[in-house]
Image (cartoon, rainbow, N blue to C red):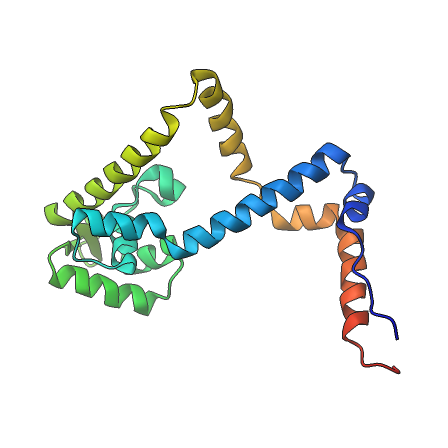
Length: 203
């Protein structure tokens, strides 16, 4: 039996209404994103920041500190809200029990503290101490310095074009159901191919 052949992605994209320029952009952007994702998983910049700043924290603890601080530009609508253990867990996508353990470590080391809610004194919130704010401020400044060095070679015109486009692109994975609906016929072709490839010979 001959090996089933995955439908050409170019053909599927054309069927979905993409022109050659769009197809080329999709392939190039996907390659860049996959490479970026691998770098993000390694968290190279954060490792270097922790080392250069002499922080006695690991990456998970640093993530929790940032989630407690919750800069609006990083966490959108949840930035500025009262922060509880469950809020931290939701902001960085970890289990609440793990968030609770990490917060306990940060409280013990005086990077964070438990405080009463102004709206409801029965509710316990998490806040950064001065020590915690020093850390998050230093890490953010570290990132800004490196990024500033990178962008220093860009023209004002390049920056004015790049930033709105990057912001627009950052929403591409939202509303997945609508996007699925737009290309459902092509998805069904892929699903049929995968099903056929997994069938034992002779069936």
